[in-house]
Image (tube, rainbow, N blue to C red):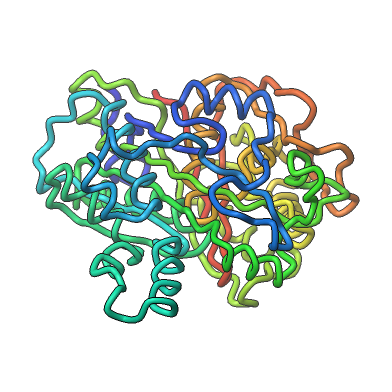
Length: 416
C-alpha cells in the first residue's frame, strides 16, 4: 500500500468521486468532451425575458431537472442554486462507490458567491406588488448561502463538520482547500466539497453590466468569452455546480476506490488592494500560487499545466498572466482557461475547473482556450488555443480569484 502520509506527515487526500452540472454538460463524459473540444456554450438567455437588459446572453444549464434528485416537493422548497449544488454532490457521491463511512466522520464544505438570489429577487417583487403577507415563508432558508451545504448533510445524514464558504469567485476552490485541511488534520475521513451558483437574474446582470465587467457581444454570444485574447471585453455569466468526494488516502486504497488524483497543495491569501480589481502585477496571485507549491512540496517545473482563472476581463487576465510568469519564469507550463467554454460560474467556477483540471491530468491533455484568436500583448505566457495539447500525466495547478481580493490555488497530482 502507498504511504498514507504526505511529506509533512499529514493525511494524504484522494479524490474518489466527481459530479458536475454545468453549461458544458451534466455528466462527466459530456462535460469533458465539450471542454476538450473547446465548444463555447454561451447563448441568448432563455429562463426569463432579457430583451431590456444591456447584456442578453449567458451560459445556462439547459434542461436540468432537480426532481430525480430531490423529489417534487423538496425541489420547490429550495432555490435553483441548491438544486444544482445538491445534484452535483449526489453525483459525486454515487461516482465514488460504496463509501460506507461513519456519518459523524463525513463532512460537507460547499462554496457559493451569492446564494439564493433568484428566490430573493422574485420575493422582493412579490413584496412590492402584493404586500408582506404574500412573501414566501421559505424565503430565508431558500436564499441563505449555507442552504446547499445544509441540504447535502440532511439528505445524506452526515453529521460531521458542515461549512459554507463565500469568497466570491474563489468560493469553491477555497471550499475544496478547506475540505483538504479537514482530512489532513483528522477532523473528517470523507468530505463532499465544491460549489454552486445560479445568479443570472435581471438585477444581477444589470449590476455586473453597470460595473463594465461583462462582455457586451450580444450579436455573437458564442464568441464573447475569450480569455487572454487581445479583443477580450469582459466575462460571460454562467451558472452551475460541481462537487468532489475527498477521502483519506489509506481509506480509499483499502476499499479499492478509483482514485482520480491526489490534492497535494492548497494556497490562499488576500490581495488587500481593491474590492474588484486584482493587485498590480498579480502580486497576490503570484504569492498564492507559491503558497500552493510550498504546501505541495513541489518545484515550479514539476507542474504540467495551469488551469487559469482566466475570466476574459482585461485586468484579470493580464494580472494573472504576469503572476504566472513571476512564479514559473521563462519556462512557465502551458496555460488554459475553460471559461471560454463555460463562461464564469462565479462561486462554482473553482470546483468546475478543478474537475476539468483532474480530467485533463488523467488524459494527459490540456484543453484549448476557446475563442482565443490572438493572444494579448499583455499576456506573457503560453496559452493553449486552437486544439488540445498533449503534455502527459503531470501535476496541475488550478487558480481561482474573487472580488474582495480572495485568492485560492489548488494543486492536483496523479494517483500513485
